[in-house]
Image 1: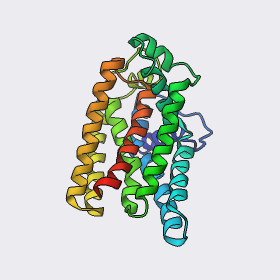
Image 2: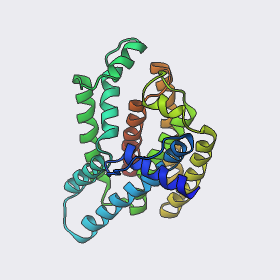
Image 3: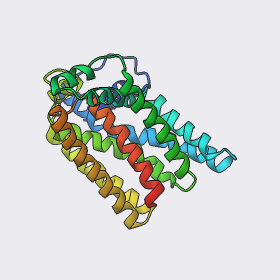
Length: 256
């Protein structure tokens, strides 16, 4: 079990972060399942980096909130290698093409970025910087820590509860090689632990509002994926992570 978890975490670093893991790792079912099970822990690692940065710059320097917001968003992009933003751009190109399902999936698989993808990317990055800058001075470090955790718990839930939009592709490849039942248990356990930390760091009702927003967005996004793409893809999962993080930063601004 320890070897599976260690290998799973290294695989998570390989596939979902820019942190180099220069070794050949096994890709059997138990290790791929462990990789996805480690996503909340990977989110905790990223959140720790972000929270430490905020603590160091906000509480020990006179840095402006706008510059701090830019740095926080930049670090998030660097840690993931822009993986989820790339998924968001591809999703924007596909959806705003207003083509049928098969054409949208083909556009999503095109490595080139189009005009709609570029616009979505700019709006998302600029919007996220503004939201972080507006809320960062009052944000609890625990909330900063938990935002990447909740986004990856949601990603894990979306991945394990939603069918793939196509028989090939990244999402389909991995869905055929995991135990969804085990991943769903991980989703529940990780959510309960994170929710308890959230309540500890803020008021009960603030935590409830945030969770309602998270559940509502996740349900609507899943329904949107099924209606427009008949399932999820790697790009749609990446776009979800960015969408959730923008939503959570927005909730800090308006509800905390």
